[in-house]
Image 1 (cartoon, rainbow, N blue to C red):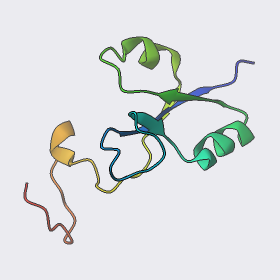
Image 2 (cartoon, rainbow, N blue to C red):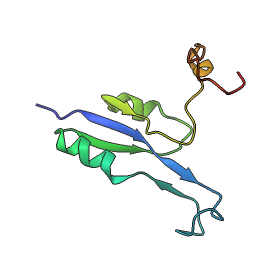
Image 3 (cartoon, rainbow, N blue to C red):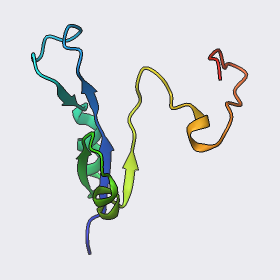
Length: 90
């Protein structure tokens, strides 16, 4: 049986004044994401920032978008924020 392929979006750093890792732009992802996917007998694939995602979307069976400093605004997928804790401008 084919193992499921799980895509994971990565973090991109272009302002390297905040990080001292590298003077050039880089991608990052905490290793725990790939570790747990492998532990669950699936194959993790890191998804870089590219213009054409269709070839990647066609080969993955699932997608993980790790947390960040901000949530994705629901307006990008045609919804409204329903939380009473919303403090952002829509």
